[in-house]
Image 1 (cartoon, rainbow, N blue to C red):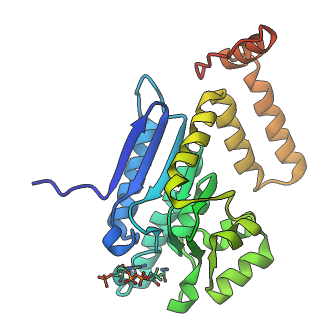
Image 2: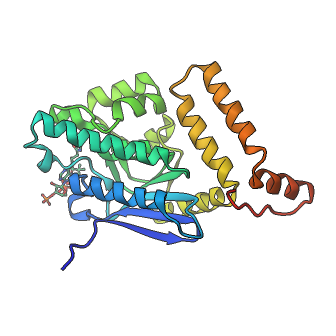
Image 3: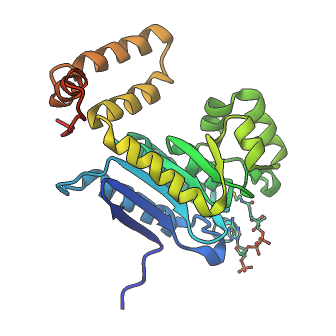
Length: 263
Ligand code: COA
């Protein structure tokens, strides 16, 4: 008999919802969960479905989004095994960032350690009231290994990131909102609905334009301002000559709704 999958993917229209289903361990990321998440997102990227995914939501089953990397599994790792585990986490983050559509993290509960890092690899985060976020690795004698020391600095600034990483403190949803770590706090029962509303709105926009925005904003972070602006100008220009640009502008002029094809 096949082992049931821990990571499930559900499609509704152009929106895919990826759910980590290991609630008995608060969705802790062991090697298998990381591999299944990688497979799930790679599958969405490679899909030849006639209706392509235009936005995805990543969430967790039960009371946690992800309570961190699996401490029980990490406890016995050698230095080399730990490097491989970190590499797998980084590859997953890079894969999410390279997807040609946005991924919204719907943080339904604890997002700690690798959970916070996974959410940070998504385009932005919505969080449920009562959720707790943080990078508690220093309590275990280690540091964040799935991009936390880097993406957290870029998201909330060096001073706030340092305080979170050095203290290992958990913060509330409201504190996370105040520091710009998350975009919105929603009642738990509405979290997925709100994420879906936004995902559907994004899915209705010009897909090539959304993909180009994501690519340019992410790549631009690693460049100086003139190089980043040049990257933007090239992407802007490349969209002229696409069916989407013609459809979008013609619809505006005709006061109608654009039918985007992603071509
Ligand atoms: N790795 C492995 N197992 C984990 C885990 C993790 N990161 N987080 C939770 N679990 C497991 C617990 O061991 C427990 O398993 P058990 O029932 O077999 O004993 C189960 O999930 C439920 O967790 P529990 O601690 O009983 O829930 P709680 O509501 O009392 O506490 C937390 C919730 C999140 C505060 C607590 O689980 C915790 O501190 N987890 C570790 C957080 C962390 O340090 N993450 C960073 C890792 S780098």
